[in-house]
Image 1 (tube, one colour):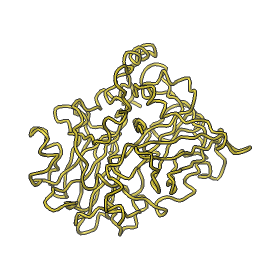
Image 2 (cartoon, one colour):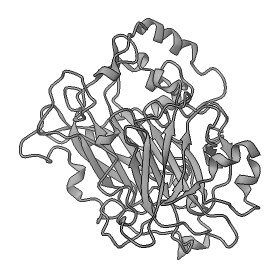
Image 3 (cartoon, chains in turn yellow, brown):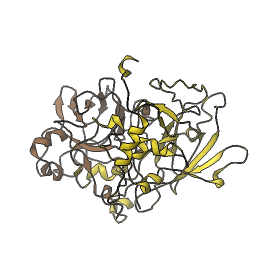
Image 4 (cartoon, chains in turn blue, green):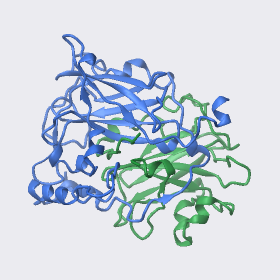
Length: 254
Length: 184
């Protein structure tokens, strides 16, 4: 633990003040601010120079391709990876991956990872003294179908403490990694659950300073996805940035 | 439609993202295998021990591949995609093939995506092969003192490409047209 020892004196009230000061008040900002000091680890890890505008070329106009050789169907069920049943409430998380024009992203890879029901990751660096669950690893993969739909069966993750400031807690979330049809659409983000009381306190969630954009990260409870006597259902549709290829590209037909 | 915001990969991405042979686009013993490697640094020049790098590249003939099999490598199929977490010293390494130009006369590059704890959204850049041909739209538009951050250096095993998230050697990171103004 030696390398992790540091004295943290920043309080939640300090962070609340920094978050309030950084709220978006101008034109809409749909992406997180890379320079967001309330998230302390970002201070030395954000570019200080403006991103350089460029038109995508070559491979950037295409995405890597994944198929059933890459992902087994069982990988979308995080509750069957071990001999026993995981602890916690089973949930279904399902939705649709769309590009910026609203077109479904078909047959593409979706990867997730998450904490267990007690808010503990099955990861050596997670020192949170909550129990590990021998029946839950917290990693899943799926391919979207022809209409862009994905579906995972998993466990409701717990919120957990971290060391950004004193008494810092992350709202419950599932990490999502997505590909589109262009490499430029690559997205890694986090899905949150509706009504979490920690939203206002969390500098990672609040690094998206526009409330409308933050809403895009919150799943909706969906009773149609709820399975009788098994699991609650959450719907989360994910919109990627637009494709730079037009449907008229002759390569699309090859 | 507006795109969903990105969020950091956090400290526990090793649970979900790296996979066996993610860094071996071809097996290391292959005669035409080359290495693309380097280190990731923060604004103090300190190595970042919890970053993840993805590369996406054409084959040596410049062909853009649409082959599945990146996650379960069969040892024979070149898919063009690789993923590697850095080690505790911030070093990443891929075994791959030399990318070719996707159009005649264009300099060849690896497309690179960078993720890290503390980095709130992914960053894109390009790693060009050494001595790129002139007339490239990106390289020509970057100030000369920063252009080198986009170009690999040759070494005995292949190519070196260090990534500086911040600081005097900050890498040129890219934004593409569809990333901008999408709330309009």
